[in-house]
Length: 346
Ligand SMILES: Nc1ncnc2c1ncn2[C@@H]1O[C@H](COP(=O)(O)OP(=O)(O)OP(=O)(O)O)[C@@H](O)[C@H]1O
Image (cartoon, rainbow, N blue to C red; front, side):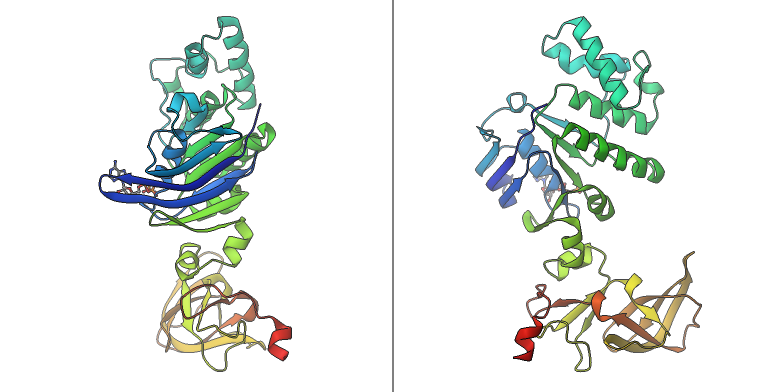
């Protein structure tokens, strides 16, 4: 299978009178897995459809390897797309569904049967040829939809929330199955998702989008630990923000705000050096299975923390967050790089 790099240069899309995508620039390495992540309506699906050729560009360029795709119709782009709804033919068997793209391309019957059997093996569905697709589970149907996309050996695989119709357990197992298959085939893949956990677990690179623009492009760990701005941080589960106080740790000299995640904030434990602390009245304490989720009313805001033991609503509690878990933001809400200790000392 040939796998290719995808390059988007200033991709702009208007739908009706609205600008839906604005100046998207992106490099996708051959064989890598990229997730388009962002809130509902930010333009993820529009970008995927623009790459597939279903949505025309107002401006910009799309290149796959050495070819310019920008003005090619979808069928000439040779990209394959898998949708949230499996979009299988209900009146056809598994083999007929899988073989359909080959039939369209005039591939002979025997060769089709060979490729269908090989694809079913890859999907761990060997022997399913004659089954009606209506007799398959959701997870099996989505694997067939994936197989139908891959059977033509496309240079680029486009996935539009392919796992979001499935229940949680199947979704988790299909995530790793899909990632293993993608890696073994080495196919350049772009997947739309609004689920940050899914993107963090699966992607080599995540494109975080907001209102038709790219906010940040980064590897999962970098995005999680250093979100570009406060909005990105909130989308990535940074559910607490506090204004910096004089006695707070000096994580970055220009910091005016700190963000932190609930799981990094603890209640009523011995205060460690270099921790951020806030005192407040307990509003609610809810058992979550592995401890308690506590909300407290502080001078900054309502803050959320975890506790190993139950705390009574109405009592005062001290919340602390270790310095290493604080994410610093400047006056413009942009993430600040960690403090350069040498600079600080000078
Ligand atoms: N055919 C259309 N005409 C006009 N506006 C459209 C059209 N299709 C989509 N939009 C608008 O474009 C914006 C982006 O939509 P898009 O479906 O790309 O977002 P998304 O990030 O994939 O959202 P979701 O996660 O909800 O699927 C939305 O504001 C949507 O209302």
